[in-house]
Structure formats: structure tokens, C-alpha cells
Length: 99
Image (cartoon, rainbow, N blue to C red):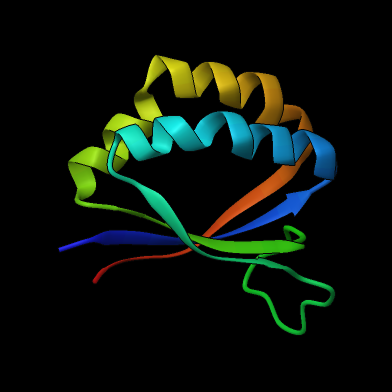
């Protein structure tokens, strides 16, 4: 069974966020993870949070242990600090579910 997250972001630096994706993807794949969908959002009509959202994507892992291992991987944390932190002002987990 796969675990998947639906995430909304407010990306404030597209080039920096693209660099984050390029650097984190090999680490993601090493943990058995991947992306399903990825959208740029022009307008949010309804939201359960005050945090702005201009990007929505799904990210999946083989199980919760792989998800946890990825998000605590020292290599990932370094990439996140370098590229993600200055590129994204808000992140909202919209859903987490098993498929």
C-alpha cells in the first residue's frame, strides 16, 4: 500500500524552487518516493487556511516508514535548507492517505 500526501505551497522564487526539486529528486527516489501530480495554481476559490497557495502536488512513498526516512534524511535536510526555505513562504498539507 502506498502513502500519498497532497500538498499546497506558496512558491515565492520559482527558480529556487526548481533547483530544490532538481536536488531533492534523487534523494526522494532513493527512498522509493516520487511525484504524481504537480500544478501551478492561478486562483484559489476556497481554502480552509489563511496561508496562500499557488502550487499543488502529490508526493508518494511505499509506506509511512519511507516517508519518515526521506523527510529526516540529512542530505534532504541540507537541500531543503539551501533551496526550499528561501523559495517557499507557506506549506499546507491538504491530505494524507493510503492508496
